[in-house]
Length: 317
Image 1 (tube, one colour):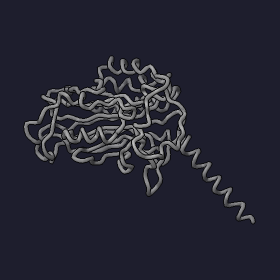
Image 2 (cartoon, helix red, strand yellow; image 1 turned 90 degrees about the horizontal axis):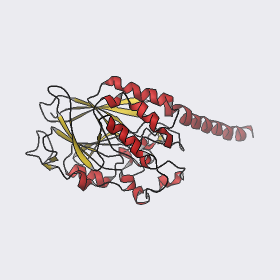
Image 3 (cartoon, helix red, strand yellow; image 1 turned 180 degrees about the vertical axis):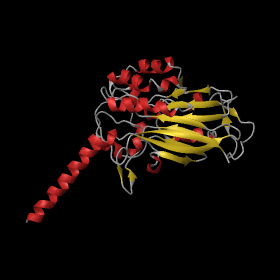
Image 4 (cartoon, one colour; image 1 turned 30 degrees about the vertical axis):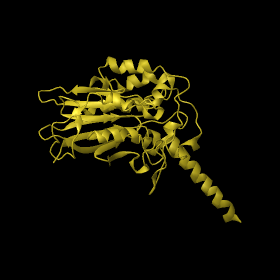
């Protein structure tokens, strides 16, 4: 009889400890991931990109603010912000404070649904339904002051890639010019890749080691894709245009991961094995950031610590 009583108590205690860890500990275990990606033409010096994503800022998250500010010490060549900076309408000031040292560097950004729409409680079972969540997401509800956030980035000189392309010429005598093609958030069906890619032209010839013909932004050394939510319709289009590297966020790496199984969901139509990290997608490299925050209504992470990523782009062999 004692064993019959002890086992449920033990399981309940373990579950409570796991929940406390997932809520109080792991969301503050910030880490930096590093990858090398061989996508540059020969003769172009290596470049370092710092990607930040899914900050989901809530006021008074001082530890997160300090950690984000510390990333400027990495001295990347430029910063890519892949959206969902907010999880509270009053978080804009904290986001701009956290990113202030990084905004002294060249940078680009796209917005995510949580930048536009105020976060609200949701039924967690909706994440387990599968399919294309963007068909169920209409983008309705109270709005954040997203223009204030956007204007803060623009004032710092960051480039807005909302359904558009642009060029980033890096400083220095040998600073390359990087082309960037970005779309608004596919999760709320604001993406317009045709508009974003309107200025792409056929590359003169495939670069050495590059797979097949590609399109590129004129007068650039490399053209990259940027999107918040990695929906396949956008990834397919970017890869078909031969963009060698696509940067995305949104998935939180699954947020809850199980040992030997991985992410439970991606909250989009991307498969679970690409929920975070560097992988290949058709002819492109794809990096999906697990991000460094959570919704304020689901502040848990398990086996999926918050992160930023330093990607070193190197010449193709």
